[in-house]
Length: 317
Length: 107
Image (cartoon, rainbow over all chains, first blue to last red; front, side, top):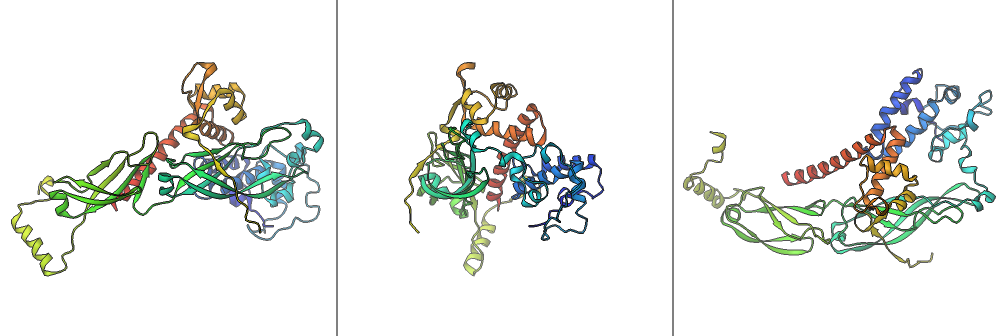
């Protein structure tokens, strides 16, 4: 088991006073709260922080932890010394109000798992009915799946209490229908596929959060889809009909004469399908032909000569 | 190993298909009605229609309510603070996706 350096996790010195520890906790809790933070490992950091604070905020636990000595390094292999906690008394059953199920083995070896999980004996369970917890998972889909619908099989790790009330990790594979028209950030709710209830309580629900895989040329905003479409200068200047790919297949797009770079053309109803489907926006991007050979150079020089064009007129130069 | 044929599960889209009543919301969030009503008062969630007894909430309310509960418990904010944080987080997310899309158009 790995040693955890709670002071390092909280970014405080070993001799930090209690109020500094409290301040450090509040600051880091805001930073790593999974609802707020964008960091990929926010959830892990937040749990670690909660565990560190659980120990350091409590003078009894902190003193016991300090007593392990300061020579331990984070990640080092650790076994608690025998009777290490002799002479310490942890109040409240040696436990506090933290959500201890999620604390590390390291924490457990020092302070125990508390009475939360050892709790419900079978006698009690029979009389006790509670709806199971709702569980959450993310599911990655392609834009194509959102346009046409799909089926996905996903594997979910979830912890279940065994007959002795100890949490056990189990794997479950589900075959899920991805409904057509689903959007980024929406959730699919699968009724009664969450954690089992206790006693006669029904199971919780499973929520799958939809995340789109990045696409090489489409970006998505709500139910609208955007794509950048390169056009030749003469297509933009003179107007043209060009083929553009859409997630629903190729379409002919009419480019009006005199279009400038960045012009947005809307293909109504070609965004993500729904009762009120989104739109597909094609953003024009004028691509310059390279002047690599004599003919091309001549064409550019011709233009320079024949067109009275100052691209910087608006800048007053 | 047996290759089991799994039943295809058809879910519902929380944000579109799901409507819940006040009592269902209490059950899902494990909050007493007074707490949920407080969330309505501070604008964390808004009923879509109906009078007090027949209130209907959108599926989104479930996520917002949960998020508010977590923020209150983990960060010690009050209900008004949670409502503000959730609105700002929503806005932040919209701006991020807009930024991402504009960046993609530029480069």
